Length: 481
Image 1 (cartoon, one colour):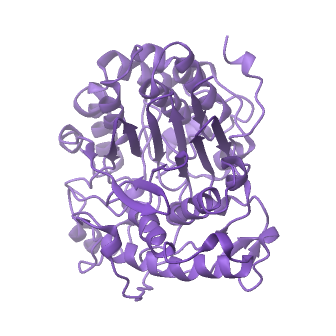
Image 2 (image 1 turned 120 degrees about the vertical axis):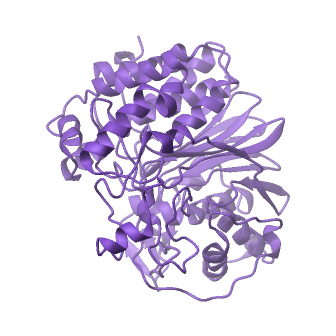
């Protein structure tokens, strides 16, 4: 087998490998994996969410499919309503345009197979149902939502059916995604928003298009590392790697190794706070400076996301998609199965903040995707919101500096510093890491993110995070007939 797929759920991983085995390329596999994840991990992502990717296809490029704020979402509106922060849930939180389907449209221009083949398994799992994981079952029990949300996800413990979502997938395939932003689905979103008091309108969707961008790049040891430019927080990891270039991590003892990672992390996160915002242009990551100031005006949050990597023997893709916090806003578009994201709740209502809310503006975004090229080629991504740079740096340092294989690097205990651009945080670590002076939590803790990745050298190796669902045992013969 000269290809690899690593996603956070066995059904999506196998769906990606299935289309590759039928002559599909990495783009076909991406559509298969991405669409299946919408179905089997709705608590981590959805059609109403965002998407980022970094791709090596001869040259390197990135995709930014984050959405901008609706024209009607203004500071004046929230001020008049007496809000100090944007609500985390409900129709006021679903104020940014979903970007992922626009990314699918870009990707579909390069596929080998048909859209119906690429979306076959997602439609099957949505229509005929699948057995939800324990993490999904718990999320369905705990997550509040509107009537349309409750109608789908409550009291479906054994088999989860999402028939409206299956119909929406069929509509997307039939119209080659046009319907989502310009046709029937866009009109359904508009109608639902009007009826529930939300912001989004047909014109917000009709004017949206995902962007192809030039990735940021840094040299770390003998590797070139690539990730998404702002509004993605990817430059945080690159700035951190740049600082780590000054240290010989390979020959440090454990105590010095982690002390070095953590002290340089603080500077990288201050760079993030100053340089990641809509409109930021980064020419040289290595030139960015930290000012070591922290604004403590708001609490931090850990978002739920799903990341995956694909290699077809030639093309390399690291991709990530999310509804932000759990299922997102808890606002589901009637009759479609589309769960709207609540990414817009990350906007500030402080007019002087670089990330303040403004119509057609994109918020600071935690999603990032990573490719590295050196002795090995590495495709890597993780969920975890604000801690994504930490997972990237810890795992890639173990591969590059300490010569771990990718599964060992992903499974190894980690620390987390869940600080947002608005607030500081304590440091937490999985107890078997035994850092002592910080806060210990149980091993294999989800607050450390769920990472997936692939390395390519003389052979192809896939890595799946034991903290998530990627290593669950499913009877695949029941699903792939």
